[in-house]
Image (cartoon, rainbow, N blue to C red; front, side):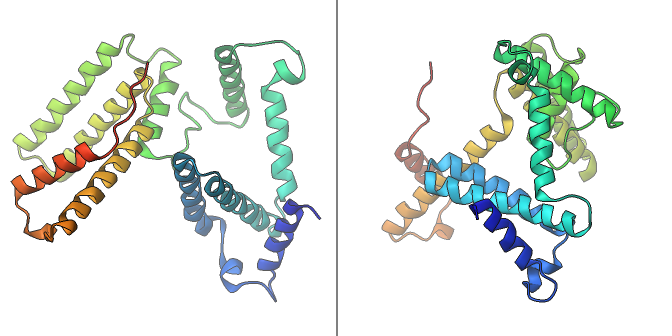
Length: 266
């Protein structure tokens, strides 16, 4: 028995109505979704850490989510894990005709164009209408903003130059600041703040910056520097709650200078 076959058998036993695990038996498609998203993010964290054992373990956890969801579907008479695997094999072969059929060489950009064209045709065949159809709503918001902008750009709805996006960021910032100045409602402030974030995400897209990855890196940098401040304060017997603004700033600068900076590129 292969490891994959063993995993499928473990899943079957966990869901067994008589002898399985009570928690596993209770799960549904909807209840598993948060766990699947969490495991996908943990894979990303493991990759960022560079630890191969961590990547291996987290990929296993993510694979288990696929097996779990496929098992629920199989119990409902819809499809099984093998059908999931067959569907992705068929899709990859279909979307790579230059590899599996025509045996011709394409550049990366040419292949991307073919891939996107086929995806669009498949969406139309499935009844999905509109240029923006199929952009998953459960994506992280910054990622989805960039994808929506990229999808709209394919039909010409985009700024021709990056300066136009930069001006849009300024425009949205001014509109958000106006809601603060004019004492507008919390809902209006949130709306304009969202517009500003959307513009920033698409500015990043034009610059070749993944906004989600950029913010993730900024979060990590903040965590690292704050942890350094905690260490410095503890070593000096200082309670963080006793610090005033100037003391916080001195500690922050010390932490900033003590943590590694991103290496230069180019």
